Amino acid sequence: MSDALLDDDFQKALGFESISASQLSRKNNEIEPSILATLFLDLVYQIQGFHHKHLKWMPLKITDSSTLPLNLTNYKWAKFRKTKAGVKLHLRLVFMDKNMVYPENAVITVAKEHDRNQLEILVGQGSHVCV
Image (tube, rainbow, N blue to C red):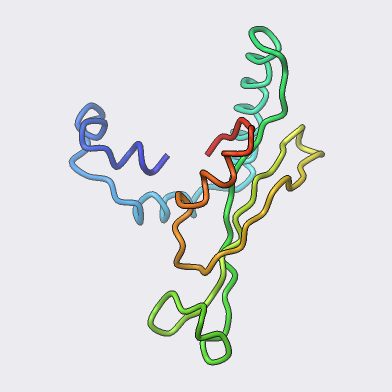
């Protein structure tokens, strides 16, 4: 979403002068998580409904990553900021419904690794993945 909103042509079409990823992050933190969960589930059900009508139904596959902080003193090899170290867990999750979500693939990298660099690995295994 942030990549689409950072597109200059898209911002002009919406009448915005600029949008930064940090602005989006701050606004996202102000939203009640239950609203985002409801929105997510609604979008999943719409996608699944489309698949039922037009395609053979397949579970929704989602990529996600989480940064896990580490002590820089003990893990110098994982340095990603001046005073921080960490690793990043990149996951491909299978979303069947709100009660059934499970990891299908995982890759661990140093925290400074960008998520896009792992998409080919996570997506390139014959799956349909939403990012």
